[in-house]
Length: 531
Ligand code: GLN
Image 1 (cartoon, rainbow, N blue to C red):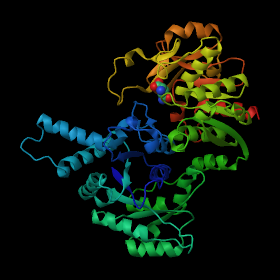
Image 2: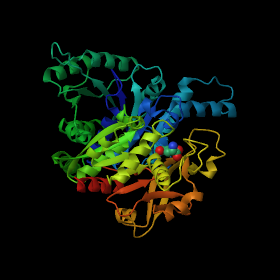
Image 3: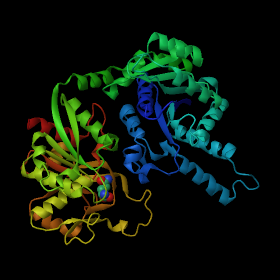
Image 4: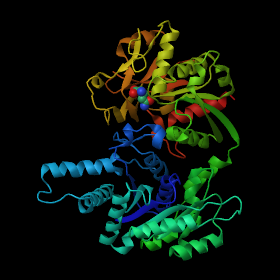
């Protein structure tokens, strides 16, 4: 097993996840089996209990992990399904060490960060790498070097490199090279300082990847090489890109692939990036634009809907168009005289997942508008539930709602799943991960998926109240997808329209460049048609 450790420096938010995923793609295109681990140095056991304002979207894995969004980049770039064990957090590690201490596993010893915590980190990393049957395991350490909370992880990685053969572990440091507007020169000092921090932790980086607005100048490269003790060809320039899927191609052109092959002493298996390149170029070639209104609550921070944005881009890519996504604060439609009319200028309306009362009436108003004006509509999870609420109200169930929003609604068309009623703890207790969905023949959903049995990822506590299904269906709402036992409603559609469809599950998590989620593909096609 070869380990490639990614550690960030200077500032957070440099795109370490995308860079890690891109490196994975480069290695994969050279014929190696690659997997990736993300380390998050926070005390939460997983990302499921964190407000998406903090770290962005909560990504859901097949096995029901609620994890860091970087894992979504890994899945999309590597076209693999990862499990929740690929996301290691401080909470998991400390929790386990404390459990072991209580059990008496360390009897007689003083339990300490070194070696007990660091040992457990190493063994978890090795175990995940082994179980994934990969040849190369990328390990992305979250945070920036120097943060107190990432120290035990960085120390564990130092120890790992000591225990493994030199050619089996390499360190990549990702830094920022800013430009000061007044002088217009690329400044290397932050990178120098960051490398010093890393050296103080006992790690000498093998490769530096430097984020900058434009490609690194020869001068900046030379300087960084000299001051940071890294050969000039191992100073890799990572300029801003408009399309993140281009990054693997750019980094490979910079020589990163060859460098890694040499450093990790890998056998030469050739190189084939052509498939990826084709997908990327097709995405970038398109000139037609579809405009999608995304009506949500967490609009100020686009990362909260990262996988949806990506799924829309994937779908646009294979339909030879570009997608312009406008995030619209649902609350603007709640004010009297809310300008719903503005939705008319869009080719499609999307109501994504969400939680809680705030903005829900605005989302319902947007759904009603899309339905009444035949604007292609896609609802996801909460968006699905609110589409049910909206439909119920439209057939005369005044005040219909989800009990999540109004526990005293006269028509609780959306209610807690029965098994949720006794759930007391919040962490990891929703209906999570991949579940089978059975699609009825002769429906739009069947057209879209082309088969009866599909599997999609979930993350919800509420569902369509079984008591109302009969009434809704009699009035024309079609539940075209149901859970395998037939009890849970999974897909809804309104027949006779271009596109009015919503899913209880999250199709966005399985979408990949060149292979969009079928629901998104159909939505974009419908949006294009209406232009
Ligand atoms: N709040 C809703 C539920 O818990 C929807 C969740 C979601 O959109 N992910 O069921």
